[in-house]
Image (cartoon, rainbow, N blue to C red):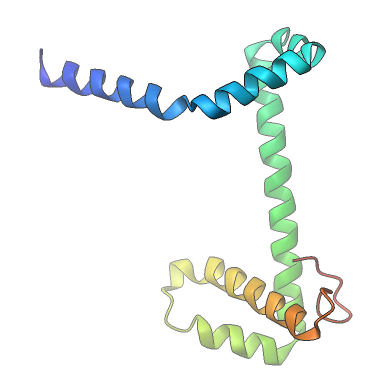
Length: 130
């Protein structure tokens, strides 16, 4: 067996092992049995339709995340003391990672502000759900 064939065989074996989780598979099988009409609905779709439906869900999650991140950035920019804290925490982050780090640290700070209030509410007058 050539090296290329051996690698392909090992990869195929790993792919099968990674993709099949018996517990999850059993749950899916039970869900299908409990929802035959839903299963029929998806089973009648073409591959293109299924892919587009999957991509729609991913697109919507991405849009929601981007909107939430923009709200967090706006909140930070409206609060100079928070912005100073965030900037201080990310000062050593490389420039190419700074935007993502800024959002992550800003979310952490928003959560801290919420916890300090003790009410489980976002910081006052922002209406941001974190």
